Image (cartoon, rainbow, N blue to C red):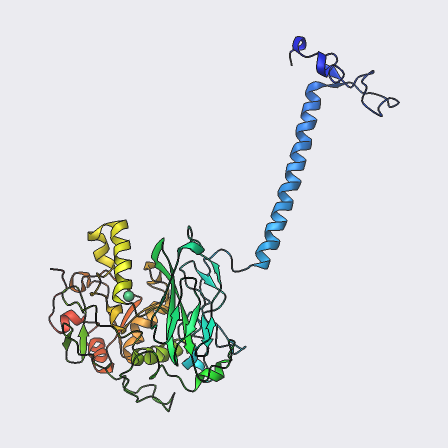
Length: 424
Ligand SMILES: [Zn+2]
C-alpha cells in the first residue's frame, strides 16, 4: 500500500509499489512471455474474483454432498409425521409405534402402524419380537433437539414380561406383551413407545404379521390379568358388540362410581394401584377403534398409554421445574392423579394442540364412544374436569357409560356423577 514501506523483502513482487509483474519480474517461467501492465488494484480484484469462484465451487460441492447424505439417511431430521395411512403390503408386523399392529392383522389392516410420532425420536423399529430369555433392541436413529444418547431414559410398562436396561436392551422374561418407552432426560414428555412381544409364537425378530396374530387380542397375557375373555375367538363380527366395562381393581383409596374408576384432581389413586401396563380390554377395544379408523383412511395410533406412579412423578416434576406448579397443574397430573396410571387411558397421535381439528381428532370425538371410550377432557369443560381441552386423551369406560356420555352430548364424568376435580 504505502510505497515507502513496501520494499525490501518483497521487492521482487512489488518492485514499484504501484505495478507488479512488469518487465523484469523474476517469477519463474515468465521470462519469455509478453507482459501486461496490471495495476495492483486490478490484480486484487482478480484475486477476489478467483476467491469467489473457489468459494462458490466449494459451496456447491458441500450442497451436493449434503444431499447425497440425506438420501442415505432419510430418517434424519426427526420431524417426520406419521403417514396418514400406511398400506402395508409387506406384512412385516413391525411398522408400528408400539401400538397395535398385531391384532390388527386379520386381513384389512396393518394400517394401524404408526411409525414415528412427533417426539423427535426415530427408531429403526417399533415392535420387538423376543423369545423368553432373548434380548433385542431398537436402534435410535434420531433424538429430539438438544438430546443425545446420553439422555436416554428407558422404562418397561411391565418388567415381569420384559426388562429394559439403561442402554435400551430388552430382555424377554415371560410370555406376554408390554411396552417399552424411550424418553429423554432433557424432556420427559418427549417419548416414543415400542411394542414388545415376548414368548411362544415368537419365531424371530422379523415376524410377518401372521405369526403373532391370531393369538392376540391383547387378551390375557402381559397387559393385565383380570381379563373378561369375551372376545377371544371371533375377531370381527362383533363390531357393534358392547364393549365391556373394564375389570375393577378394588384397592383401598380407589374411588368407583358403579364400574367407573374415578381419577381426577379430587380423587387420586394410591401408588400401589399398578396394573403394570395398559389394561387388556382397553387395549383390545382401542385396537378395534384404530382398525376401523384405518378403514376410513385415518391413522389413529397409541402414543402414550400406561404410566406408573413413579414415571408420572418424573413427568410432573419436570413440568413444575419448567413452568411452575400452577401452570403445570393445568395440563399435567400430579402423581396419583393421572388417569394413565389406571391403564385405562390412552393418548393418541400427536400429544399437543396441533392434533385438534385434524380428521383423526374429529373422527375420534365422533366415534370413540362406539368402542367404549370417552373423550375425557372436552372443550369448554376445563373448569369442570380441571384440565385444558385434550382432544388426544381418551378413557376407556365400557359401552354402557360411553353411550350414556355420548347421548348426553359429551358430558364429563364429573358432571355425570356430580364430582369435583380440584386439588386440596
Ligand atoms: Zn393423557
